[in-house]
Length: 527
Image 1 (cartoon, helix red, strand yellow):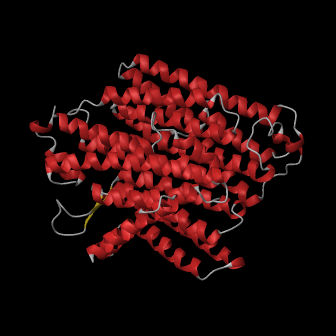
Image 2: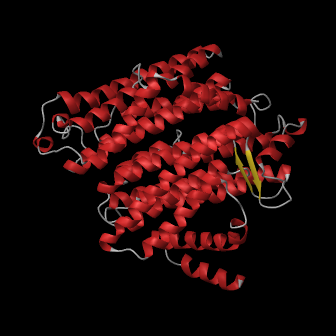
Image 3: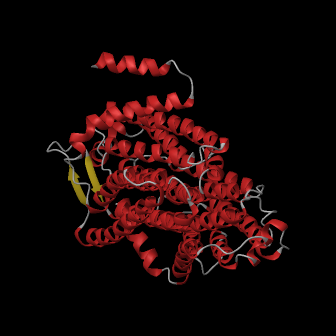
C-alpha cells in the first residue's frame, strides 16, 4: 500500500502546474483525514464545535443534491447553522463562566491524546468568529450570484477550522484544524477563478502560508524533541523547570512559532499576501480574512505566550514589541498611499494587528485586556468596512476611490455605515475601537513603555488621516459619472451593516460589560 501511495505521489510530482501541486497537497490531506477519522468521530468537540461540524458536513451533502434555483436551500441552511451555533456559543460562554473550562480527551493517556480545551478565552474568540461568519453569510445572499452550493459549505468549513483551532488543547489537534481553515481560505480567495488576479493572490497566499506552516512544524518538532508532549497544559508544567529557561533551543522554538503564526496574522514582514488577497477575494471573504482569519494567528500567540511561555519565565517582550511597532507603522504608512479601497482596508488591518500584538507584548492584565477587546472591535469594524465596500463595488463594479467620489449621495445608508466603521477605527470617542485603543495605550504608559505608547498614538493619528480622507471622498466630493449611476444596496445586504454599526455604538457608549469581560479573561490567562 505504501509503495502504491509513493508511486501516485511521484506521478503527480512530474507535473509543474499549480493544480498538480494542489492535487498533491490534497492527496496527503486526504490520507491524513482517512487515517484520523476513527479518532475524530470518537471525540466530543463540545457543543459549539459539534454544531459547526454537523452543519459543515450536512451542508456539503445538501449541496450535492441541489442545483440551479435550489442552491438557495444550501444558502438558507448555512445561515441557520451560523445562527444556531452563535446561540450555542453564547450559552456555552455562560456555562464556562459559571462552571470553569471544559477539557475533553480522546483517550485515557492524557499527556499524548488529542484534547479539546474550552476556557473563557477560547469561547470569547470562537463567538466572534461565528458572529462575523453569520454577518458575512447574510450579506452574501445577494452578493454571491453564482456557485452558491460551493461557496456556503466552504464558508462554514472555514469557520469550523478556525473554531477548532481555538478549541484545541494540543498542537496536533490545532494543526489539523489549522489546515482545514487554510485550505478553505485558499479556495475562497480564488473563488472567482476565472480572474487571473484571484488565482495569483490565492497562489501567493498558499506559498507564504505553507512557509509559515513549515516554520510552525519545525518549532513544534524542537519542542517535542525536548519535552515529549505537545499538550498545552503539559508543556506549561514541564517548561517551568529551570533546565528549559534561558535555553537557546526553547527560544528558537518560540521564534519559529511566532514567525509561522505571524504569517497568518499578517504581521510585518510576513504581511505581503494580505493586500493581494483582499482585492481578489469576494468582499464577504475579505471581511472574514481581515476580520477573523488573521485573528487565529493572534489567538495562538496569546495562548502560547501566556500559558506555555509566560513572560515571567521567558523574555520575549522586547522582540514582540519591535514586531508590533514595525507592523503598525508599515500598515498605516502604506494604507495612506492606496487608492484602491480594498487594498487600503487590507493595509489598515495589518496596522491594527500591530496594535493587538502590542497589547499582548505589554504583558500586563490591562495590556492583554486591551488587545482582546481590540480583537472584537477590529473584527466587527473591519467586517463592517469590507461589507460596506463590497456593497459599493457590487453596485458600480469599481474599487478606485476617485471613481467612487460622491457615491454617498446615492447610497446614503451604506456609506453612513461605512463611515461609522471608519470613524471607529480612526479612534473617534463614542465608538468601540476608541475604547480598546485607549486601553492599550494607557496599559503601555502604566508599564512605563512611554516611547512605544507615543508611537502607537502617532499611528492612531495616521489611521485617522486616511479614514477621514475616505469619508471625505465618498460623502463630500462631487459625484463622478460612475457614482451617479449607483443605487442603494438591497435590504438583506444593508441588514448586517446596520447590526455591526449598532454594535460599534453600543460598545463605544456602554463599554463597561465588554471591558469587564475581557479583564476577567486576561486575569484567567495571566495567572
